[in-house]
Image 1 (cartoon, rainbow, N blue to C red):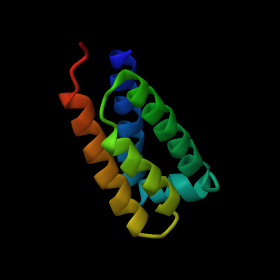
Image 2: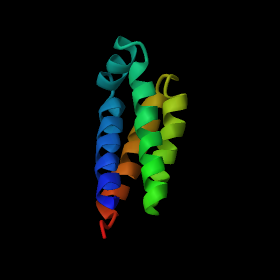
Image 3: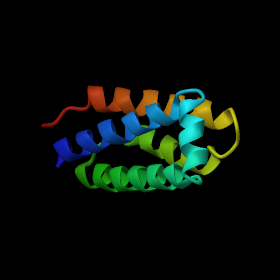
Length: 98
C-alpha cells in the first residue's frame, strides 16, 4: 500500500511541477479551460486518502489541494504549483515503502 502512495506522490508531484513551469503551465491550464486544476485536485485527494489509510504523511498533497483551489490567480498559481511540487516530491523521495 505504501508503494502505491509513493507512486501517486511522484505522479501528482510531477504534474504540479509541469504546471509550475512559467508560461508552459499557464498555457496548459488556460488552454484546457482550467480542467488541469480539477485533475490536480482529484489526484491530491486520491493520494491523501491512500496516504491516510497507509499511515503516511501527505503534507505536500494537502498543500496541493490548496494550490488547486487558488491556482487560477495569475503568478500566485505558478508559485504555489512550484512549492507544491517541491513538497510532494521531497515527501515521495523520503518515504519508506516498508
